[in-house]
Every structure is written in C-alpha cells, then in structure tokens.
Amino acid sequence: MKNILFRDDQSLLGSNWYILPKKLFIIPFILSFIGILAIYSLIGDEYSILLIFKHIIFLSISIVILVFLSLLPKNDLRKILNIMCIFFIFLLLVVPIFGYEIKGATRWISFNFFSIQPSELLKGPLICMFSWFCYLYTKTNNKLYLFISFIIILLVILLLFSQPDIGTLLVYISIISLILILYFRNIKLFIVLGFVGLFFLLIAYFLLDHVAYRIDNFLDGDNSQISRSLSAIKTGGIFGVGLGEGQLKYSIPESHNDFIFAILVEEFGVLFGLFVSFLYPVFFILARKSILRPSNLFISNTIFCLCFLMCLQAFVNIGSAIKLIPPTGMTLPFISYGGSSMLSYAIIFGTVINFSKNEESATNNS
Image (cartoon, helix red, strand yellow):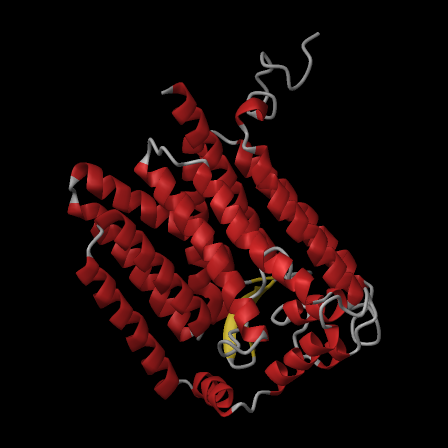
C-alpha cells in the first residue's frame, strides 16, 4: 500500500509536500501561539473565558484555511481568490443595508452567532485580482483589463469612504499604489498617487468628525487610549511583569485587538515586543528569498504586495500603541482577537506560501 507523503503520493498533501516552502509556516504558527497567550492573559473581571474559546475556534478555522490554500495548484487558487473578491465586494455593497454601527462606523454584518467585516476579508483577494489584471495588461496591452480593475477599485474606495473606514481605505490606496508602481515603474505615477492619498486624508479630516477628533487628540497629546498603552509598556520594562500579572491592560479600551501590543509588552517586556515586531519583516524576507529568480511577474509582485500589506498593518497597529501615529482601529495580524482579521490573514499567508511553493518549483525546474 502506498504511503502518504511519499513522492509517488498524488493526494493534495502528498503531491505538494516536497515542494512546499515549510519554513514559511513557522512565522504564522508563532504568531498564533503569541495571540493565544495574549488573549488568555486578558481573562478576568472584564473578559470572560469565552473570549479565549472563541479565539481558538477562529484560529483553528484560519489555520485549516491557510494550509488548504497553500496546497492548491496556483491557477486554482487564483480563480478561488477572484471568486472570493467578487463575493466580499458584494458583502461590502450590502453593509450599508444590513450592517450595524459601532463608534460611528458601519463596517460589520452580523449573523446570529458571529459578525464579519467584509473590508478586512477583501484585502488579500482584491490585491491578487488587481495584480492579475495589471499583469494581463502588461502581457497583452489590452486597456480593458485596466479599465475593469479601476472600476472595481473605485467602487471599493467609495464604499469604504461611505462606511467610513478611513484607516483601511488608506491601506488599500497604499497597496494599490504599490502594485501600480511595481508594474509600471513610473516616478510620476508615484507622486500622483501620493497626492491622491493625501487628498483622501484631507477630505476625511474636514468631513468626518471622528477622524478629525482622533487626529486632533493625537497632535494635542490628549488621547487616553494611547496614554494608558504607553503606561502599560513602561510598566513592562525590559522583561515584563509575567503572564497574567499585568494590571494596566484592563484600563485600555479595545485591548484585545487594537492595543494588544501593549498587553504583550506589559507582560513579556520590551525585548519580547521587539521580537514580535520583527516576525513580520522576517516572513517578508523569507518569502522574497523564494523569488530571487522570479519566472512570473504576477507571482513575484503579488507576494511582495501581500507581504508589504502584512508589515504595513503591523506597523500601523504597533505605531498606534507607541504613539507614532493616531489610532486607526487596525488589528495586529494573527495575534489580535477577531475572526475577520484572522481569516483575512489566513488567506494572505496561505496565498504567499502557495505562490512561493509554485515559484520555487518553477525556478528549480527551469
């Protein structure tokens, strides 16, 4: 009887085992474990034990999705991502109708036992779809591909602005700009896109009260969340106060997602915080090493943009906690509590690992 994982095994796992970049699994699994520790440390008066159970359920589903996507044939994955993109855009369209409001923003759709945030889930699939259309344009010079992709991007931007979700909108604009720069390599385009991002930020500041409030409070140094986050970080010192021993974490609003970095530093110390911060660029570097000799422009550019997105979101979350930038409500990838965030980054990690696998295979066979 044929043994699983032997080279003649044609199952989904067996046929991919020897070309899978297994080192890329290390970082998301480390981040997952750190997230469990952080959420567990919150259990107490304010958070019930149900929080850690729900976190582990979301995480388990996300890990299964990550592994499954990493094993698929490249073209099958790309088609699935395109379907996901269309589906999540549809959910984004119905958010104003069926969504519910939290803190002045309507971003979530509630089902009986869980809620989802379509703008979060859309990140990876939209990047892959836009990158694919740009790739087709460079190969065929057919402007229809660019026209379709820009219509989709414009629709997403308008929907995000209407929610409003300015932090996520600026992240989308940054990544879309990066894709255009990678494919077209035009410095004038870079300058124009920079002004587009600045334009949206100014419009949001003058039209949306909660955006102006956050920015003004940040500039005036009068933000209680950030102050409490900094206090927790200072209390942690170099080595932290120990798992579950932190007390200031209970005074930080949204400590289980937006300010989870402060919890980690309070309990495990600044050195551990630096370790967590470097995990994201390390994953980026490992993924880039797999495409040092790229045989496919779509794969190399998509991997670069997905990894950049992950590092950018980590920087925004950590930067908010240490008062580098105003708070935006973004999670720390694969650590913060939140089903939509974990599922989103399961898709992103799985896609990067899958494309790295195919790229390594193609390079080795060339």
